[in-house]
Image (cartoon, rainbow, N blue to C red):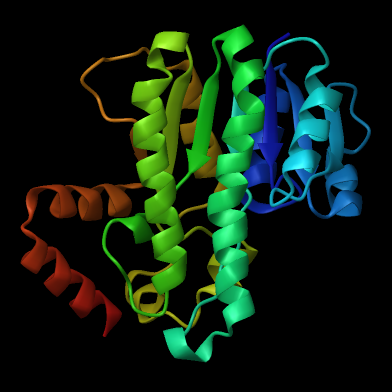
Length: 254
């Protein structure tokens, strides 16, 4: 039985990914900082293992992976857990900025470090949740976008570094998703009002399934864009000069 460990699995994208893989016969580790909520989400199903994981805690990472994997390997590790505070940069307190950096960046770094030996044994896949906010900095999402830019860069580096070890490294790049974070926490961003929240967690989960099972193409970048709207923005960003990307970001944020 193939295995996958998902962080932030109590709700939203993480839960949707866990549910999809469970429905298709995988053994699924559902981990979240909210132990009660993730245990309820797992529902005592035979192939679902749940536990508390604060991704900011390196020792907690090692314990969770040892609990789920034992002496074996891991086919997929999904770094999904993330937090967001939106609004004018100077109106967000330092603790909220720090929390975004710790969860969204250090949480991914610690997950990659702790997961590496297990992924290496299984020649598995590291799948990081990125965001369209990493395409160009967005007002009211400044620090969040910066953390996702870090995840994007880390994904690119590890994809090259770990290729020779048989580990595939990929990222998912959605725009705004209809989760608690997407519907509540980003309402301070004008870009949300202009672009709307059009993606569902299930759409992101379906893309995750395809990425895990896709064939490798050596010349293809490691990022997988989710949704037609995001693909359009990503294409415009990739083929536009920086001044034009800035202009688009400025128009969207008005």
